[in-house]
Each structure stands twice: as structure tokens, then as C-alpha cells.
Length: 230
Image (cartoon, rainbow, N blue to C red):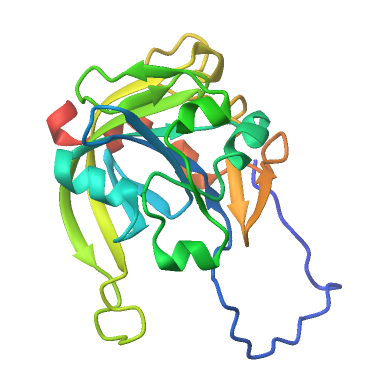
């Protein structure tokens, strides 16, 4: 059944030109687990991530401890917290594993923390295909290997050298059964999965239930599986 929406009585908005300082319109929060030089674990929240198949692009600052660890070890774990984990995630918000704290982070009120898992009250688990840590409480763990790095905004003298997009390849996925589709071994149920969303520096969750049917949902998910996973 197709749903027809009548917009005839809805007034057309009048747009205005604007220049917001940031353009974070809403993306899932990711807790990136990496390993420090001494073998200890680092855990960092971020929300500049998007996926294509089993590949993911991560937007990170080049001076962050997470970036340093990822480029040195070539691996990480993308832990996806659910909306009810917001308090734990917020405890990590202005912490860094870099010591001394980088100047740009000092300006924003960051402090050095060695035990990121401890201050967030989260439990580290060993990865199976990587040496980086999983966060037990997160419903989704995506183990990943670094595949490439693209330096962002090379044409902008103000931020050149400060931002990078890192491509990672997912090597193993761990799912909490409570977010999986009943009777399916390899599918997440979007009606059960409630991701934590960051939008313009604020935390949000998804409203329960679908807005309407999706035409794309008629395509079997299996058709998107990467050839290497078939």
C-alpha cells in the first residue's frame, strides 16, 4: 500500500542564507577503541562516521590519540552505543588520551585521562581479529582494519593538516541478540536498535517505530553483501 501525503495546505518555507559553524545534522555516536603504545586501551567518542557495505569512513582530527593509535597499529573497534548509554558516553566527552593535551583541546576544556573505560564505567573486551578493545555494554562491536587515509581540506590554510578521513574495513561484527531480527542470524532489527545520535553537539535518540514504509526496504539486504563476504 502506498501512502499519499497531501502537502497542499502546508505553507512553503522561506529559506535564508546562513553560515552555521558546524554542519552536524545528525549521525550515530561511535566509541572508537584503540590500543596505546604501552598496551593499555583508549576509548574515544566521535560522530563523524558513515558506512558503505563493510567499509566505514571516519572523520578525525590528525592530532588525536585515536588517530595516532589507528595509524600506528592499523586497527580499531567501532563500538556503537545505544541511546540508553548516553550518560556513560558523556563522561568521555571532553577527555583525551594524549598527554600532554593538545593546545586546541586545552582551549575547549579537555583533560587527559588514562583509563577511559574506567571513567565511563564500561567494560573492555578483547577483539578477536584485532588487538583493539570492544566495549561490552555497547550492542554493536565492529572490529576493523585501517585501509587508507585522506587528508581533508588541503586547500584551506586554516585547517590544513588538522583533519583526516580514515577508511576502515570491517573484519568482524558482534551483535547483542536483543537488537537482532527474530529468526535471522545476520540481520539487525531496526525496530529494536536504538542508536545514540549526535546532532549539533546535543544527544538524541530515534523515535520508536517507522515513519512509513520504505521502498528501499523491498530490496533484500543480502544483495548488498560485499563480494568478499559471499
